[in-house]
Image 1 (cartoon, rainbow, N blue to C red):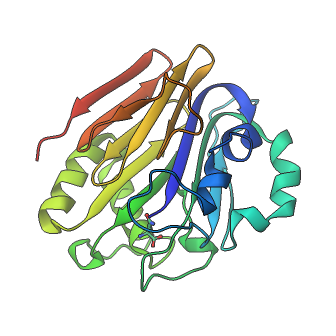
Image 2 (spheres, protein in one colour):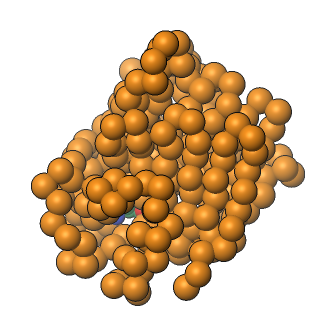
Length: 233
Ligand code: GLN
């Protein structure tokens, strides 16, 4: 399964979120500490973020690749000078049978939204969506969530889980103003600091302030704070 991370707060570099933490996404791509399925995340990576200097709210920009993140010297070179108040990044361990190309790497996007999925879902339970960025299950799920409205993502996850009880549906979404997290089969943890809040599949360091979100829960991060509520079955 994949690993992902989101940041909302004071602008910081993409490198400081993705590459620099001791156990951050880069390290998690080859040595995750808390991954339940899969041992490496080498089937691509992606990062999406927002132009913090834009006078009008603007759609995010993305940089994605089908290669392992650890081999990407150009990204390592540029990431320290890419800065944003809202960042969503993922490294991918492709589910068997899914395409392995850049278009299948999270985050997926629609308008102001970015979405990353950690898990798998039977595409047969999802309506076909022409706007899906890839045939990958996560891209079809993202298109489904976007079509029904990110505001009702918790309800959408419950409906999809009813249709495919074997699905793993942990999600991270952001619109640059808030982060929404859903735990459904894989973990999320968050770190709230005075500078902002990080949400990640697994803590990027051993800071004791990391809090694990229980399974089947809905996390909301806004500038006002963090809330965690239970999803019904
Ligand atoms: N099913 C998705 C994919 O194939 C996500 C896999 C994962 O979470 N490891 O990319």
